Amino acid sequence: MQVGIFQTQEAAADYAAAHIIDVVGGATDPVLGVATGSTPLKLYERLRAAHAAGTFTLAGKKAIALDEYVGIADDHPERYRNVLRTELVGEDKTGLTDELLFTPDSSAPDPQAAAARYDEQIRALGGATIQILGIGSDGHIAFNEPGGSLVSRTHVDVLTAQTRTDNARFFDGDLAKVPTESISQGLGTIMEAKEIILLAFGEGKARAVKELVEGAVSAKWPATVLQMHPKVTVLVDEAAASQLELADFYTERWNARH
Ligand code: PGA
Image (tube, rainbow, N blue to C red; front, side):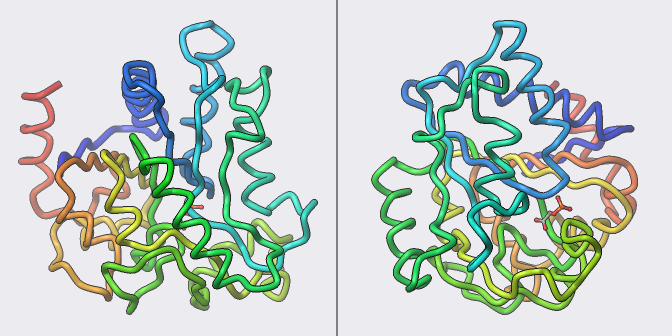
């Protein structure tokens, strides 16, 4: 795992965007793994700017989402397919087209079957060339909540009270409006991405980042499974890095490589 500790979120987003532009630009038929939540928003802003400047495009390229709420209205702005449309789809965004954006089916009558279909779809696409990830304050990645299998495939998961509280800000601050279930890529599915870039900002993520980087691999902190992946970059600001015991060492190693 490489750990980049940046003074600001903006600097981390600059690095992440430049790296993604390199990887996506250099790959044949790339598949970009995209995340939702507030963490990647500055990164997406930079990808849109690069598209506007003519130095990057997702036109003709595929993007796969990590997860989706179950049972959310098709036109709800927080439906992840709609969030990703708003951020990335269209010539005025990154050039990504709606038909090449893959997301789990939020309105399927049988969500478990929809999850299995989505897993098949990801396999058929060959998995993500590079996967963008955030991390929950409880250590989840996508909606893989604590206590799940470390080798799970795409599945229906019940959201923890912590995650629903964290996400209530997207639903008028009203916990009752936050969906209770999601379809999420499994940890085993995410681990098949060829490369992973995880971003985490703010004090609220400090404990999860400490466990991710320095904790024992454990279902209690699902993100720790990433320690078993050969190509992961963790990009954090100083607040999110504040509980790392070996921060100075990571920075020394990072500076030697960049
Ligand atoms: P956030 O969510 O980016 O909104 O903090 C991250 C996550 O829950 O995975």
